[in-house]
Image (cartoon, rainbow, N blue to C red; front, side):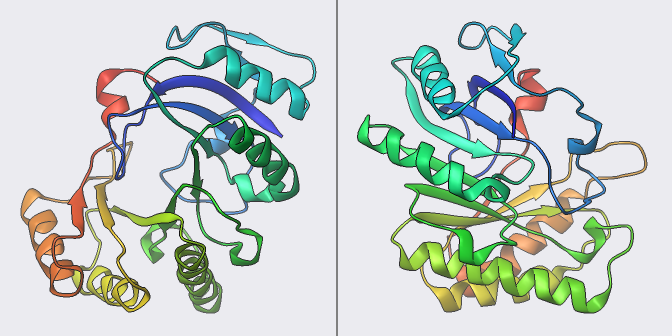
Length: 243
């Protein structure tokens, strides 16, 4: 269930630059072309000291262990605990139990999800939903993509109605269509006060980032519906060389 737990700096999205403890869950049903989840073979990896980048591997890890590890990695500058992946909502029953314990202990909780499970969400202080584009996949059927997108929007709406501080993130590629992102911005504005984070893909192999001009044009187009609730974030942690 758990890939790794560690302390680091949030490298993307609305809360970039804040100190988090990351609880990374293993596995995801989606196969995004820029994702490295399927290349990770380890499980139950735990950072020895906050921000050290040095790990030990546990044989087993139950919910009590996870909470104890979070307590051990807590630092005075901690902003929140992020549940990321993979896809954390694959394990929503265990996740809910962990979140309830952490809330009682005074932690802020943060969900990072692909949004494909709208009926599994519950209250988090903050939630980041990664909206996928067709070009994020090598092959995806039109009906499958439309269903995924509907679920992503429904997930954001459900979290918004739960009073979570939910925002959307879209990875932008060289071939991303500006009007496609603009339509997503319109759908987000219909929900309410939602921030959209535009994130240029980190170049990898044949995957190329969009031009600076395209990023400006996308932000301007989205601003027609979201006003100043549009921001650009890069994967800062990769530039810093941290997890």
